[in-house]
Image (cartoon, rainbow, N blue to C red; front, side):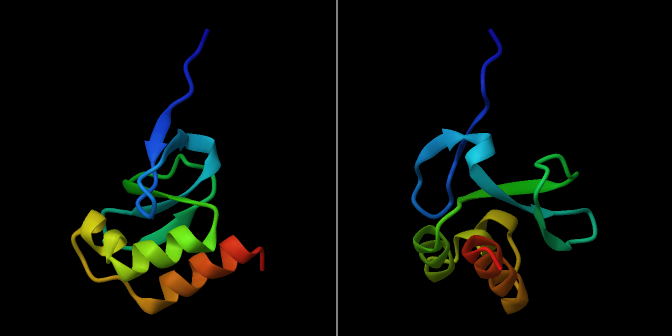
Amino acid sequence: MKSIPQRTCIGCNEKKDKKEFIRIVKDNQNNISIDRTGKANGRGAYICDNIECLEKAIKNKRIEKSFKMNIDESIYEDLRNVISGK
């Protein structure tokens, strides 16, 4: 039986199956993007698909700490839109 990969949310620190998360990726050129497939190359961070976890991660600058760089506000807006289903 194949095991399902587990990941930890950077907002609430809860462990869940990888497919339940939204993946944020930093590539070699330091571009930050949202990875729907979960297979894009680069350093990944995972966040639950709810707005509370996103707001907690933004407030505590957890995404910036994960990638060791400043994050543009447009990335946060994109994440809010993805979570709210726009």
